[in-house]
Length: 208
Image (cartoon, rainbow, N blue to C red):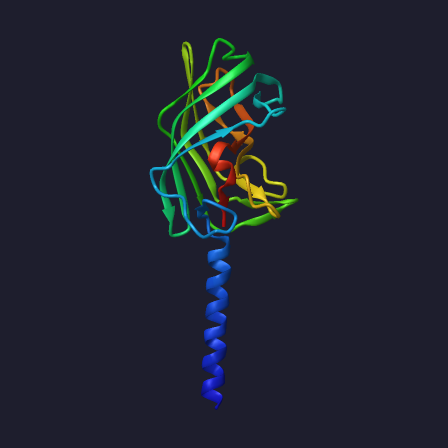
């Protein structure tokens, strides 16, 4: 009898552990029901919400550039084993002031990766295991590159993280929270602040 009880308890712990892991793993699903994973090859668009801005600051907090509209185009390359990856295929900026007001574009290349478990961030669920590597912004006469590592803290700062509303579970946003450091900005240091939210069909997608 003791062996049966021990075995049953062991199985129960194993099942609970699997459930907890899969519930928080970084997989992007087509709906909040989390039944169908978004297929590899799917293209996504993330945009700055109306009223939000893409900002670049110098190391003293001075505003170097602000754009009142921006998009980032992505193509899913992995969405399994608790890892979501998507390659940047382009992007646009609009109504910019400061460096890049002549026009900024996102060059193809660069990778967004989300992995690990989630944490509570106010009314949102956040995945701090997020990176955005080799994202390249091109301005006439200047090419800037971002290798943004995971944000940390509560609320998360100094990097990039992914989040979604805890209750609605959508839409998913990629948040650059004072992300350090943008290379070749023309200043000693440039830090980026922006919030890109999945739009169109992808606005219903949910991480879980």
